[in-house]
Image (cartoon, rainbow, N blue to C red; front, top):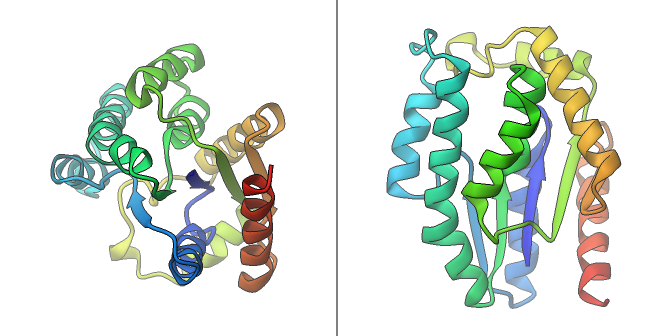
Length: 205
């Protein structure tokens, strides 16, 4: 099963991925955890370029193509092989991030971004996508708790950018049945329970 986690920066995705990984391993499942951008030797090098705070001159066209390149390598090197081997693949972000961040956030043509993602992911369409939604005020609050120097290039984006990204995610969640919208202000335990219940339900179908 291919499970992806989406949301604004600081929404708590990584925590939920780790909890689900431990839960599935304890249940005797084979689990592969990946992050985006990254997940392979080549993709991690692309990640370094994308997130380097010193690369402030990066154009949005460069950004969307680099994300797609990283993703294409990850899909073919890791995701598809692991799915074929019967693994649960848990991904901290996937192609929906590019639709939300680069199309809705940056303003790149939506149809182009969708087509580019379709090319990059091939047959690797998630079985379920958990969108952990938090309001912009919570993003700002959590961001303020982090050392400013540790923020990557994208995390340094302005509030207006994040507003547009959130609108994009909400639009995706409304129009695609694989999305499960989760209130990110709930407790860590409540969110994880919702995730586990959803996966159990999908496996029983």
